[in-house]
Length: 163
Image (cartoon, rainbow, N blue to C red):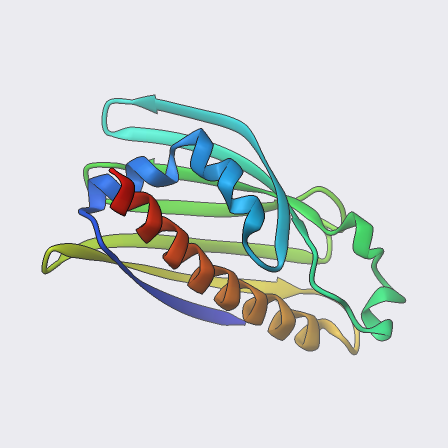
C-alpha cells in the first residue's frame, strides 16, 4: 500500500532537520500516539550527511484476527534513516525486529522551503504479507502513521518555536 503524508512546518528545512536529529526530540516523541518507547540507537552527523536509527513499538489495538497471527507485544522495529542535509531528503527503511518475512516498508521524506517555513512530504510503501488480513493490517499501519505524523507535526512546530 502506498502512502503520502504532508506536513507544514514553521522552520527552515535545516532547522527541521536539526529538530529531527536532536536526541531530546526523539525522547519527546514518546508522548505521540500509536507508537511508544522511541529508543535512539544511533545518531551520527558528518558534514551534509546524517544517519539515525530509532526503535519503535506499535501500541495501537489490533483486531483479534490480526492478534491470531502476530503477537502485538512483538510489533517493534527500527526506523533506519539516512539524511542528505544538503538536498533535504531522508531515506527511511523499516527493519522489523520480528516478522521481517511479513512486513516491508520504506519511505522518503523531502523538505522544501515554503514561505517562512517548510513542507515535509513523506512518500512510501507498506507491504504486509499475511493471508486474509494483510491488506487490513496495511490500512491500520498507514492510518496509524497518518495520525502519528499529524501529532509529530505539532510537536516539531512546538520545538521550532522554542528555538
